[in-house]
Amino acid sequence: MVDMAVSFWSGLKRFILWDYPRACWQYDVMVGLILAFIFLTPKVWFRDQPRPSSIVILQAHDGTDVVWLAPELLAQVPDAGKKDAAAELVRKRFGKQLRFARLDPIFDAESEIKGYMATVRP
Image (cartoon, rainbow, N blue to C red; front, top):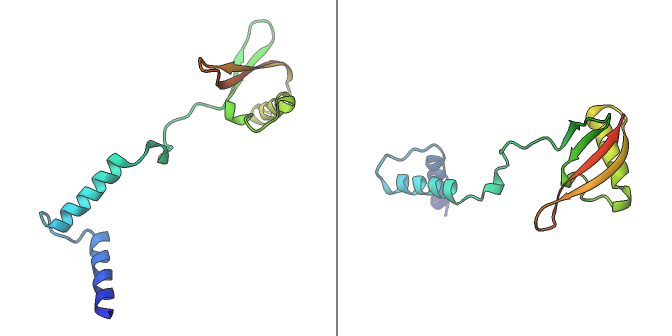
């Protein structure tokens, strides 16, 4: 039993340190495992894609500004409190107090919310 445990730890050590010679079956198994990991791992496991800012302020022409908010920022907020929550998020992000005139959801073709457009005044 002790011999089996020593053999296991020795094999694990050789696997981690990549101690097998090229063209042996252990080497081929390790390369196969690496390739399987690379090609079979779901993309969502790695969230390393660049993401746009979740709050963007856009300039308007009539003295008002338009702020775009990502939908996940207000997903858990009830409809009655979305305007106040959006105002607080903008204040935290830009450090200025703005009066919200309107907060409109932006829908895609399947009627899913893709963001919010808020009309604000300084």
